[in-house]
Image (cartoon, rainbow, N blue to C red; front, side, top):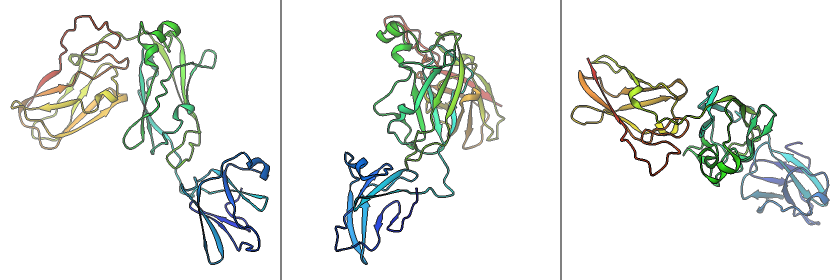
Length: 334
């Protein structure tokens, strides 16, 4: 495949027919895909676009730019001209930079991963490229992942929330009763995101991503902030408070669910950094700490890896009496 030919030249935005023979029909069509004969294109739809002429040359301008590293074919005078638009030499392919959680062991009623990409990904057909494999027989687990019509992507398109099928993970629901839980204690699995997943420019990853883990018994206990340990800074510094929790918590549920206030109820300005795979959260204040008593306030929606939050269990009987959760921790800085 060449990006240029004696008769045509190609860019991301234009196909140019050089010196068309105006005594003949100079119109041409462009198709997505690589074809070796005109007969292969007869049942295909040509790419939509507009034509223009300038300095004796004929131009085709597609409505959407051609995607780099994809194959196309021009059909002209019963001949075909395949082409690709080459990637820039400096182009950096899409990569997965982090998975939350990245644990080697997960409870059998685990609910969701957060997949961090190096750049925005295309929302089209994401779930076609993601699978869960049972390592014992190397088979794909059926109905393991929840294929949402609109994938859960962050505003910048770089963080994907990937759900294990909740209907199978929650007891007493139809899918759970018919198929059982997705993950079986004692088994091991591999999450695979294949190399054909694309970024927003339509360029695929260069290699498969794999994350393997084993499965432990289900977690059916509510998390509690009373087990958290606080590593406190000294007064008159901007050193961070380090919140250390004993079990891994759900990365997404920790976003925007914490605040620190002083004895007057004033919110302390600063920044929380969640080191999710380290079981730590760091809070760095905008201004120096004073000698004072402060309170860490938490929203009840903070979850563990199995969807149990500070207020309730994921698959708790909704008629069961609930005990109000502890949502505040007080501490003093000296």
